[in-house]
Length: 204
Image (tube, rainbow, N blue to C red):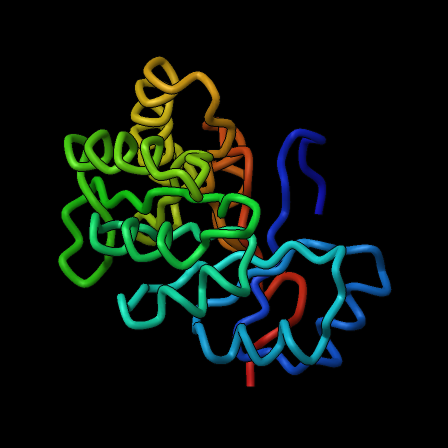
């Protein structure tokens, strides 16, 4: 798997056993992503390595915000003001939590995420939150097999990222691209890809 040096790789370890994560760690990988809060917290506590960067990638229930803020280093799936406020409150006394806003630019009702206008509202709220750091946006566009269709979707997301960066020059993360489409994502400007099966194999 070859990609540019400026693209960070999140190894998506949801539903993967701890020994597979340990193996990836022994091979030098340090960034892991989990989709389920309790599963992620259990792994973080059992593996207990201070040089791992843990990313929360899945849907967020507001009652789980304290667990996320206490244990994870990043949360990529923020899409509500209530969640921003609860994460900020729970993170007090710790280094700021890195936050990406999840966007949904293709009207997929079954997926979380906000549209363009809501993205700017949430960005401002995160910037004003004392214990959070706005890092950028995360997207999970519709699955496409065709490279050109993948590219077209990613370019739309990248345009929004650039508009956000014009307003908040400190942001540095465009999280998009997974095992089946990361090449198109990188071509469109992704700075962070989230890969599961291509690293760990099929989940149990």
